[in-house]
Length: 268
Image: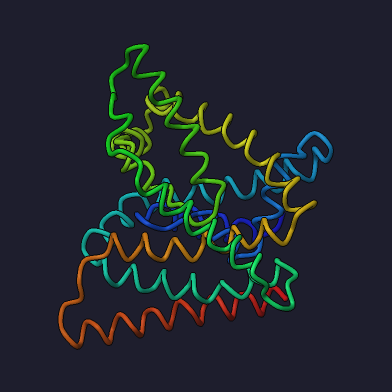
């Protein structure tokens, strides 16, 4: 057992409960994104190691969902600015970690193009029509809608920079999914979960190949995702309220930045 994997799974699961925050981004920052992708996409090649790693991660993330779904929703509702600034600081602190993975010593015009592609994809994801899959009944159509929403939700789970919670809000299934989780309603969340599993299996295989064969463009696009996620968080955040609130938010951003830098130093 690796306690750090459990802890990182818990922190990443907690971050996914905050609208505007990407679990993939936090996985990159915490240094386990590549391992997550390879463990899922190459599961059959390394069954024992992959199963043990994924089990620990899922236990940590699942515990965060079960324990913190209520408290995190309350914090996000009552202190949206403070939460947003802390997360922004953490994301900025993690950018050097992701940039290191690009293996780039000097930026070129192609690097900037790949970065721009990542930013553009995040912007386009935010333009998805609202309440696209809002059907929440138990009919066959409701099942199909939730299944498709699960496949699209997998994009937010796997790709950094795209917020899982925000994606669910846009599709109109946030209340349905998290309400079912909070009520321990397995059947209510089953079609969504099945769609997520299928989407994750398809996407992780593609990403593993891309990261191994084309690390520079792949990680530069991912870096664009991560930087673009800051804009999503700012868009979700209400305006600042006075000089003292502004200073406090800046301090929280600095705390988030320092925490991630210290963690990355520890990992190295």
